[in-house]
Length: 386
Ligand SMILES: [Zn+2]
Image 1: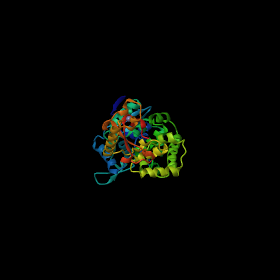
Image 2: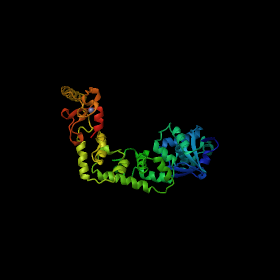
Image 3: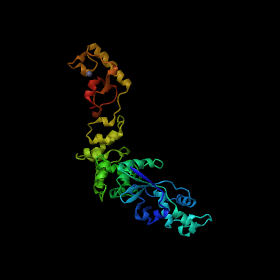
Image 4: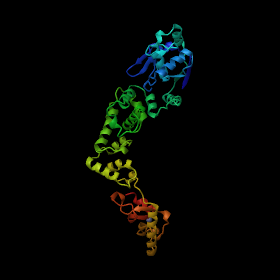
């Protein structure tokens, strides 16, 4: 990556052709159209507090530095990487979008300032680093210079790197707080739409986990039809299979669940009955796992992290089993005892054994002493968590 320090560009040049979008509340272009003030990756203009805007103008009038600005070379154009808010404030003032309070207590817009003060502002030379490099270099750099402010998260960085019509359209759909479907989405997707976290999830789903790859190959697409359709499909599927909404449903990897299970038929009434039963089961400690457990037909209790026997119960079962086995002269592991191997008569130490549900939990077996048996580790693992 190459960087060039420019100290020759004046406020006047930056403000030439300044365009401000009142609708979007952001500066768009400057430097006779060569400077993109708000590329796709910048956050919305949030400098709007009058006091901060006036502070920038005040600094220029007093000859104070307004800090480093960072531009990135993008073909023939320059894009503002850092400093967009300051530049927008200056542009807005010079184009008479707001007034400042003069030392005489009167409000003054740009044209009503004395000529020498107008000149002072326009002749101010800004301190600008212009950077040129690969996407990953700029990404790293962007991450570094943003440490001082609110750090950008992964998706905000990606929006920077793959900026273009696709990102613009995607943000309009997925980071739009007035989108009426947002509330429904948030039952399933965790995160803040303004920090691009809903978009991130939508991209993860459609890209099968490869967000960067997907954004790269769709960067110059004029629409987001596929992204939108896939996201709606997944959300609608989740909402159809599961009739109700539980807080643990939020943040599940619905994209993966859809991939794995959407081809199966479900009876929503039956599904929800099973969900409710599991929710009221005290032995299920991972409520989050209930949904995939039910989708998979109840075959993988590991998802539920079913509460295990406590040590006292296990010790109790161990001593009963061991004394009975000793009398019979067989192994205290009931499965070893009926086998033909060398371990038929082996008495395992407590530490070498594990507690097992005689009647499987998933078939209604209780987690108490009457349903507890100790198995040697090998046999317990072989039996699995069925
Ligand atoms: Zn055994």
